[in-house]
Length: 367
Image 1 (cartoon, rainbow, N blue to C red):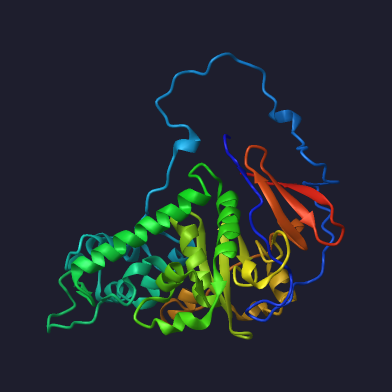
Image 2 (cartoon, rainbow, N blue to C red):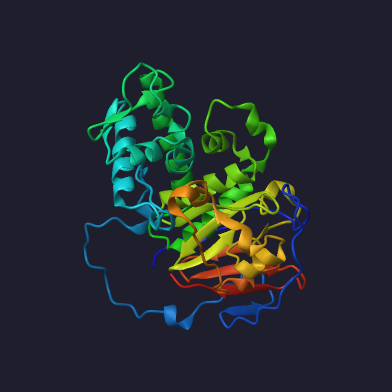
C-alpha cells in the first residue's frame, strides 16, 4: 500500500491533566509484534517481505494514485454502535434532514413523529451534524405543525442564507482537517491514530467554551479548538465518523468524565483525547497511554466499568433500554508508557519511545 511517513510533530508529558488524572506507570507488554531496538540516527529497518522483484513499467491506469485522493465532506455520517438501537428509518430520515438544511429548504420527508423529534434534537445534531445544533430546531415558531403526514418542518434560528454559509464554511474546515492529516487509503487504525495525534496537539482544555451559549458545543469546539471533556470527545468522534470509523462519546458518571468508544476491526476500545492533550504536558513526543484502551485500562485509571455509558444511548435510555459495549481486546497494550515518534504506513509500523528505558521500538499493525 502506497502511503506516507507521518513525522514527529507533537509533544506532551504524562502528568496531571485537565480532567484531573495522572498517567499510570509503565507496563511490560511482551507483545510478539513489537520489536525493541536502540535508536540509530538515520536508520530505518525494513521488512524483507516488502521487497518485491522488478517487474518493468506499471500498467497504464485511469485510477488516481493514493496520494492524489482527497476527502469530501460527508453529510451522512453513520455509527454502527448507535444503529444497534436506532434503525434504518432514523438514519434515512436524518439524512433527508441533513440534505434539506444544507440546501436551505423548509421541509424533509420523515418516517414518524418520534423519528422527527430525534432528527431535530440538539444532542443528535451536536454529535452528527454540528453546524445545525441550536441553529435549526423542530419547535414551531410560526404556528405551523412541526410534523404531519410524513413531512417534517425545519425552523431556522438565524436567516437561512446565513445558516447555509455557516454550514458550508464548517464543511470546508472539516474537509481541510481531514486532508491535511489523513488519506482516504488509510486503514481505520491509521485514521484513528493520525487524527489523535492531530487532535491532542491542536486542541486545548478550556471552560471558556461556555461563554458561547448560542452555538452547539461541538461546533464551538471546532471553531475555537478548545472545550471540556464532553465537547472534546464529541468533536474527535465526529472527525472519525467523517472518515468512516465508528466512534461515539462515552461517559463515566463516577468521575464526571467523557471520552470515546471506537470500533476498529470489529473490536471496541476506549480513547481519551482530553487526558492526552498536548497542552497539558511537557515532553518531546505525544504519549499514547490513553489511546485504544481496554476496560481494565479504564478501570486502572479510575473509571469504573459498570458506570461507563455511551452518551447518546443513555440520553435515550427510556426508549432504547439497557445497552452494553465491549472493550477487552489488548492488541494495543504495547502503547502503555510510550510516546509516539512516527507512523510508517508503507511498512504498517508505529515507532515508539519507551518512557522508562529511553529506547525506541516498533509496533506492527494490521490494515
